[in-house]
Length: 147
Image 1 (cartoon, helix red, strand yellow):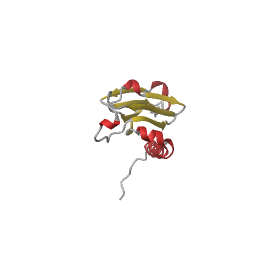
Image 2: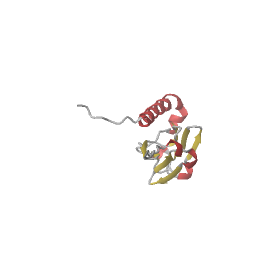
Image 3: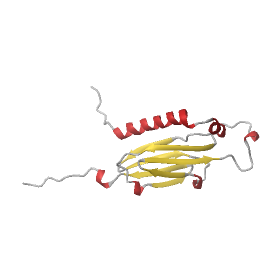
Image 4: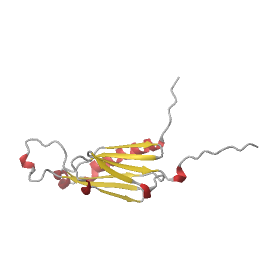
């Protein structure tokens, strides 16, 4: 007998959107100059927890003032840049494996997100966005009155 699993369309949609974003970023957004500058794409986790969607992005060693978050329509865009330590240049390094330079990530948000209540925080190199759902999209319990 097969176990019954709950289908979560939002989770599947977000995973598909993430794969599509990476595909387009790798294919179209990197011109030779961006590649030379070390354009990169920080890792992101997106989860749905109760009445909100939570996005966590790894952006270590980036000052929070160098991170820009915009919402236009249903598109959430996060931009930033990680620079080499002050006073150093690429030629100073024997090995340079971590990516540096500008990044940009965009995500399509579902219509259920209350864009006016989105909150962002930054701690220990993790940018966290809490995207609450609109009140009218939350499930409501309907009581049956005795007849």
